Length: 230
Image (cartoon, rainbow, N blue to C red):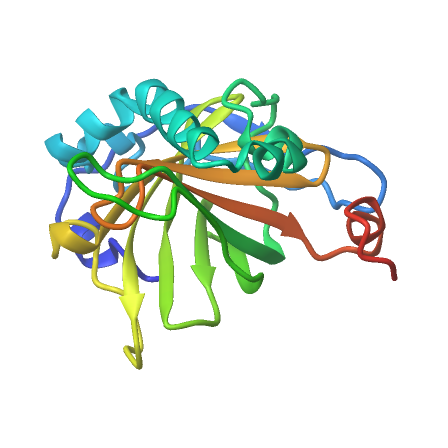
């Protein structure tokens, strides 16, 4: 949760007037993030590395190539079964995920250039959490040997930006974004259904062409809509 804090403290103050509201469907508490207040860095462009900016700019190409590789490897039905989660054009308004606990999954598509791989892997669900701190949103993966964590930055109503890093093994906290480029993460946060968000990470450094982190809030109604019962 405290990723970037050291880095940001040394940067000039900036202000950004914006207000984002999570969808107010039944069972999901409306959450408003007001970033008009003073923020050490109000624009993610002042933090992101040039390499990660280039990756985000190639997100459409990464989607096309990753899906094509996965389908060519025989995973077409698995892709279709995921519905809007793996639809590049599925982004809906109100992209900011509301604070609270989530059930999350990681899906890996395709393989990096010059490498081979499984081309489609859907890992088991794990616990993660979106936290609001001083009008900023953060995501923390709470379980597992690889725990992505970082800040969610406003960009537009239907797309936010995630900048973070990977916490490994028995580490107590992830490195700050930018401390270790090999562990930096950069992606787009989008809402794709009433109770479903995703973080799309193009060109991860290992294993895949594109990673998709699914986030589903833990509420009774959300669980029913996802077919989990309860």
